[in-house]
Amino acid sequence: MRVVVLGAGFGGLEITTRLSDELGDDIDVTLVDQADGFIFGFSKLDVMFGKREPHAVHHPYVDIVKPGVRFVQSTVTSIDPQAKHVVTDAGELEADVLVVALGADLHPEATPGLLEAGHEFYTVPGAFACRDVLAAFEGGRVVVAVTSVPFKCPPAPSETALLAHDLLSARGLRDRSEIALVMPLPMPIPPSPAASKALLQAFEERGIEWHPNTVVRELDPATKVARLADGGEMPFDLFLGVPVHRVPEVVQASGMSVDGWVPVDPRTLETSYPDVYAVGDVASVGTPKAGVFAEGQGSVVADAIIARARGSAAGQYDGRGICYLEFGNDQVAKVDVMFEPGQAPHGDFLAPSEAFMADKREFGADRIRRWFGRTWL
Ligand SMILES: Cc1cc2nc3c(=O)[nH]c(=O)nc-3n(C[C@H](O)[C@H](O)[C@H](O)COP(=O)(O)OP(=O)(O)OC[C@H]3O[C@@H](n4cnc5c(N)ncnc54)[C@H](O)[C@@H]3O)c2cc1C
Image (cartoon, rainbow, N blue to C red; front, side, top):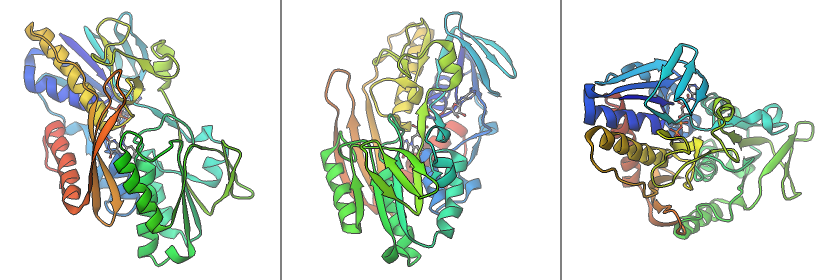
């Protein structure tokens, strides 16, 4: 069976690993990505806040040496989901099963003034550049803001505000700085009222302003004022923004997306095209756009392909994900959330501790061991 997996992020790496582990050379998997390596979303914050060096968080795809798997570094330029035919700048691919795991593209240029007057911290270059920006910052008003919905990793802006507090405190700049957080959500983590309460308390204790239910629409470079969707205005000295997210252009052109993202059966992740699946940020599954969900969805698609190869029954996606939440000062909390189709999302919250910081490190190390076959400390 020829399986073509487009995108080697959380979703694509999990599918590929599971297929190789279970079927080895009995399967023919081609994994395509335009990048030369993988970087965890949370590693962007680690680099931005000076906790890790850029080279230490980059996991080269050349390390993927697995039975049955071929990695091709190239850009996907066209997808025909009907024919399961893919064109890349390194050649064409035919699939029996096609998996689209291309994530969400980020568009800082879609928010007027963001590139001229502010900084975005969601792309790899953007987050890495913010490290120097933060190191050179002399204090003042910091605005951390989301510019549109949906956006990946809903906890990340809250984590950024808390980590900015730590960094400014450590640099002796907190007394002459203000931090404001602008979020489109009514509370920081809507499925977990307990996690939201703990975050709101942490903001209050640290003097971080919380502005819910709105986004920043534009920045005025001349006056250094951010304009909000609710009509409000907010002055800033340092603006750290979450840029607009869109489905990758090649997916849009394929006709697979509806209302911005690729619709799938939330139990099987199959699209409306037979034997074509979409997982992770590119799909509209009903879960947040986060790596843990992309991974869980990838695992269910791998199960389906393995079951097909063996003639057995496949499992279904349950919408579960465990998220780690940075509170700063080496304290990490854990939120165990469920997004079951047809039911209100709900989650359990485990309070911040240093033990969960170690847990989070092991979460990353475990993926690198399984996906890349190497140790990551
Ligand atoms: C600051 C930050 C912190 C985060 N923290 C967390 C966290 O703590 N926990 C968590 O679970 N999630 C976190 N996330 C979210 C997480 O990174 C994403 O949700 C996750 O990576 C989505 O996985 P994916 O497989 O759908 O897509 P991705 O991991 O984005 O992978 C998509 C891949 O497709 C490739 N690609 C795209 N277009 C093309 C093309 N045309 N041709 C070839 N290749 C292409 C890309 O290069 C990329 O490698 C965070 C994100 C950010 C920005």
